[in-house]
Structures are given as C-alpha cells and as structure tokens.
Image 1 (cartoon, rainbow, N blue to C red):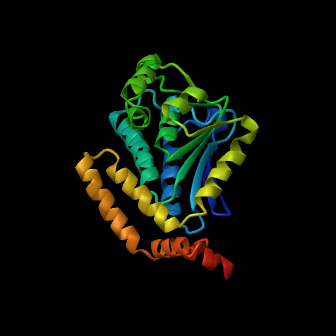
Image 2: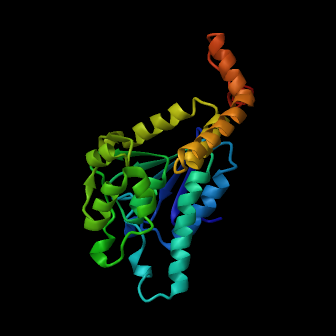
Image 3: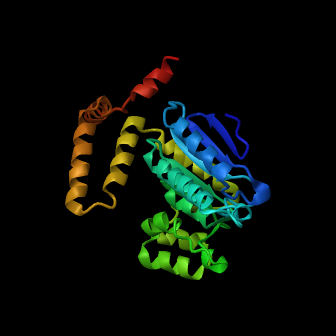
Amino acid sequence: MELRHLNLCIADGIARLTLNRPERRNALSVELLKELLIVLGGLQHDPGARVIVISGEGAVFSSGHDLSEMIDRDGAFYDELFTICTDVMLRLQELSQPVIAQVHGTATAAGCQLVAACDLAVASEDARFATPGVHIGLFCSTPMVPLTRAVGRKRAMQMLLTGDFVDAATALDWGLINYVVAPDELAMRTDELAQQIMRFSPVVIGIGKRAFYAQVDAPEADAYKTACNAMSGNAQHDDAQEGMTAFLEKRKPQWPIQRAEQHR
C-alpha cells in the first residue's frame, strides 16, 4: 500500500508512524485515518514491531479533523468519518504492542483524542492540548470518550466546555500524558521509554495490555474476574515460567524473542 499521508519506519523493534500532512497541520482526513487503520492492522502481526510510536511532521502533532473536507457534506460522509476515527482509536487499544504518542506543538480536538487513546504519551514542554470544538459549533463528542477516561469527568468537562488550552505541565498533572521533556529531548526520551518496555516479554506485555482495557471500566467484581483469568493464563505461559525461574536463580530472564535474536 502506498502511504500518502503517513510515514512508516520500523527499526530496532520500534515502529515509528509519523502523521505527514504538515501543510494541513496533520489534520486527520478520512484518507489519513484509513491509512492509519490499515497500517496499525498490519503492525499487529509484525514481530519486528514491538512498540509503536506516533508523532507528527512539522510544527504540530495534530490539529484534529480536517475541517476543509467537512463543509456541506451529507450524513453518510460524517458517519464514515467519525466511524473510521473511532475504529482507529479502538485499534490502538486492541493492538498487543504498547503505543506511545510523541507530542510536540499542539494536539487539538481529534488530535488530542489520539493522544488520549494511546497507551502512553511523552510531550515536549511547549506542547499544548485542547478540545476546542465549542468555538466552532461542533462539540468534541468523540474526543470526549478517551479524554474523560484519561483525566476524569470534571477536568474533561472543563476542557470540553471552555475549549481552553492546557499546557504540558497541567496535562501531566491531570494524567493525559506521562512525561514532559525539553523539546530537544523529546525523541530521545520516547525512544528510551520504548527501549525500557522492550526489555520485557512481548507476549506478557500483550496479555497485560488486553487485560488492562478489558477490566478498566468494568465493575470491580467483573474486573477481578477478568484479571484472574488473564493472570492464570499468563502464569502458565513459558515466558512467565522462565521469568519466575530466572528470579529464583538470580539471573536475567531470556525471553524466546531474545534467544531467537541471539541465534540470527
């Protein structure tokens, strides 16, 4: 597939996806969303992609939906746009690999939604976040879904009802992002986080990520049931047996993927 609005580079276990519409402030057009959905689906089964990093080309991370393609369209277009955007956000959680947003500049509306939907986020000190749909008569209802789950009801409503920007320090305090770094350290810190995750078993990471999203919004008793089932299955896996044995033997575990790489 030829990618027109998205760059993909896979190296050293990290799949780097770069939104590549800098002339449109990386607006999430229908075509870009389609490319994202297809590429993410392919990465799910790529053993060379153990962590996925999403960033933006140019001055900003993403300005959200492309308003220029949203004027005087019929209901079918809007249904397609918001459905495929939702599919992308859900796909991020369905992937077994952790997904890290590498954020610079601004992330607004659906761009903020994309940050909130990723598993982790690293932002530069100059990054700002907003859901400013109220300013143009289009409430950010779909960005609201992951935003509320990331920052809580009152803070999400503050962002949604005012459309005001939140700076990186506030976004960190509210739980929208995980780290704030100097702009010239953004890529390095993101890679360090990816490398830290890649020290662990990718199978176990996938089990844990699936269990996390399955339990996170469930009632406590149901969440425990989901977690117990996940942990029981995990404990029986070869990687868990290797990890526990290595701990008892006071050595570093050797995951199958590491052994395979050593014998290449």
